[in-house]
Length: 317
Image 1 (cartoon, rainbow, N blue to C red):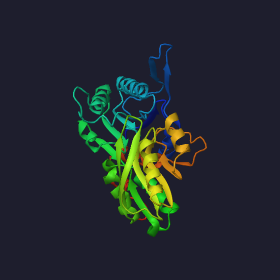
Image 2 (tube, rainbow, N blue to C red; image 1 turned 45 degrees about the vertical axis):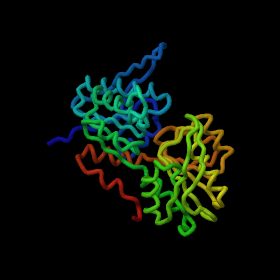
Image 3 (tube, one colour; image 1 turned 60 degrees about the horizontal axis):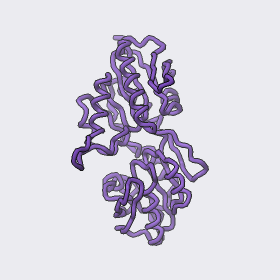
Image 4 (cartoon, rainbow, N blue to C red; image 1 turned 30 degrees about the vertical axis):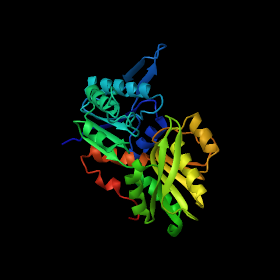
């Protein structure tokens, strides 16, 4: 039986990552016109035959989030109307993931709304990485392959920090303890956390820590940062308690001007992240690791109807 042809397309949110993924998979990036009219409406045209093909559309829903989400929906609608056999939405970063529950009166559950929109537009399955909330997988009635950036990040950390006796993993807030605990277990080092109080949407006050940091190399583990408020507040606190160095690792780094300014004057010695969203380090000590190999291998396995479980394994463990 002839295997369905694999096609990969991308929106405009993260074209460099899409090209890297195509190089890993060994297929050319699909030809598509994606442009905006003067009134900022999005126009899409698939410029090649995809009838009966297994189509993967790559799009990180990063800033401007609404524009990139709409672009993704339009691309999937175009692929569906072009008779693609299966459409997989590849979202290295899933936007609106922090609006995953109704924690105030009269507010939406926007991550569920985004899930509904993706399915309505034509997605047959979803491939994403490091969701802010695990329960978002349950918002879909289609298969969701949820990858973790930890194999890529941990591989780098094991090479950078060789003295594990002087290393400690910290969560910059209580909510991230599960992720930090997984890192601490893999790195075979102690675990701690910082208690924080959010004073506004962009301002955080770190006021207590649990764990020993005196003379230690501290690694702060989080899934996402935009304003760097949580990370810089935690870094300042652990440095005040005698930490020898403080580094942070985040899966999705979407720094704005406020975030860059905070990092410039922060106690952080370095930030390690992935290219799930485009990032210009602007001369700061930011290490950007590629997840193209991880996503590319997942695409190949999904296309071949193989298990993706092996992608969760970390080298050397």
